Image (cartoon, rainbow, N blue to C red):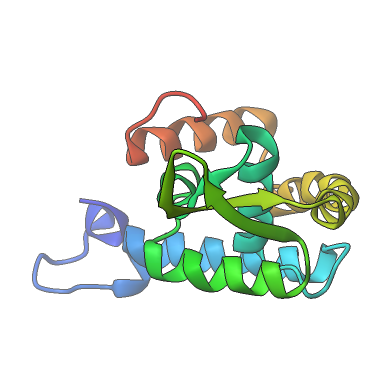
Length: 154
């Protein structure tokens, strides 16, 4: 077990604030607050940023491919794409080999927003882990990859 139980907490007590889900959620909430406070574009959310990064790094993709490359669920990615399209940061087109498939492409405006955001993203990552020493940072990244089941970044 994790948390206070190891420090002598009786088995029948459950401190939700010492559970992994709670701590991960709190860490993510802190990261999101840092993201919003330090983003170069106050309208850009972290999931929109991740979507733009995936499109820049992997090229035009279908919604299903974006779901896989960003780890954002299908219902959420639809809304993200709609908001990015409304801002002209992405464009939608037909797949030449399958007219039923919609392909999402980052636009020049999207690249401009993304290019301005990259230095901010580096700072956001730094601010998120600023209280950790280099060994703790390495251990955190390793542990998170272990939890999600991958030893390397995808």
